[in-house]
Length: 111
Length: 113
Image (tube, rainbow over all chains, first blue to last red; front, side):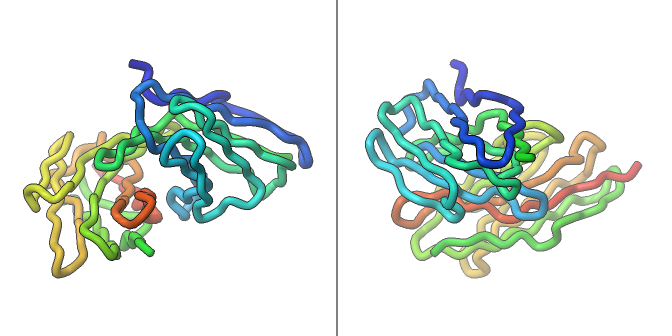
């Protein structure tokens, strides 16, 4: 099993550009989430999904969109990148009672 | 709303000494609790989890944690630190409606020879 696969691993954007971070899991998990990690702030939840077609906002959703058209995929869209979105982004999947499985992360720099 | 507080953003221990990382949580329902470890430039790896079975949970690499409902705590310990334990550790809780997984701010462990 590949687990949770995130692409790309690194990305540099100019302010105002848009992009999509990809996340795919092959474990048939119903829950998927996106987090951002910033120094001293732990992991903060951006958006999450409890199943295909169902998404909800987390703690820091502004500037990001998500959709969940299939169980496997949960892409994160940055609509108009800002320097404040420079961060490391992690995708995770889990079932209701299990631990979360994480991708390797995407290091995003917005200049 | 559920929340997690990790006391101490940085902990320094000598090799061979006890490692103690503190985690307190709030949750309106019986929680699931987790400890994760993150090595530099890597993703998060599960150390151990509490899911309402035994209150003392043993994990990988010699770590264990004890769930204390009365204290709303889930502290992580290891009797003897190794250099390889240098990493950042995160406590997380899940349990409220929507099953969000909420993380604490993390504790970075430095192991001195």
